[in-house]
Picture: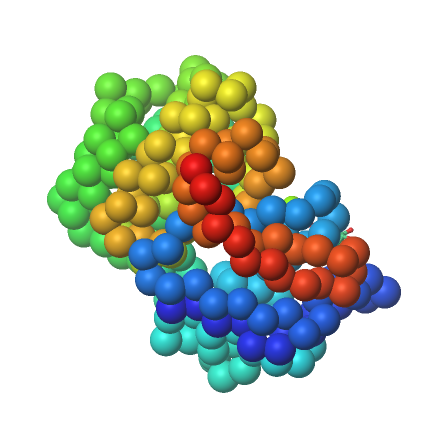
Length: 224
Ligand SMILES: Nc1ncnc2c1ncn2[C@@H]1O[C@H](COP(=O)(O)OP(=O)(O)O)[C@@H](O)[C@H]1O
Ligand SMILES: [Mg+2]
């Protein structure tokens, strides 16, 4: 489902990955850890093809970074749900319209939009907040809206970039449980975090970015 094959990546004057190799199978839940600045967000950007390797390639589903045409990048992104630490909701639109926006840009019929929004909001337990504005929601509720938005196109992969970074521990647990539930139905999840409490509480694969800029990936299983 996801392969990094001998990936080198640098920003101008900032090497990030050298010979990075990793593989994630469909349906896996993976924690991506490593200290701040090591390249977690960059790794996620390489997956949704906001960045491209200097050498090597990233294969995501049927798409490969070395052959994808620019016009096909939106199709890839529609199949990947992305969640950020700062939620990135449209603050001038209510919850319903934040979700509708994603579907309107692809010309989804109105009835279908409604059906998908109700389904996505019920997945995150927020059907009663459809008409609320983002500013009327708690941090945890905002992140649940962001998750609903991420799953609205039924993605095969969810990328979560420190999604609990702005949340208290109890709310962080709730967000993790929702992502676990979605994962249990077959959607792969890559969850970048430096919240070790959260990682310890959930038995999942852990990928660690290590060695400063020369990145090595260590795979290890936790006992519990
Ligand atoms: N757009 C950019 N231009 C140049 N350097 C960047 C850019 N984004 C991130 N970096 C640098 O790349 C490295 C990896 O950053 P990042 O992927 O954001 O790390 P993390 O998410 O693990 O904190 C850091 O040294 C950071 O300063
Ligand atoms: Mg980051």
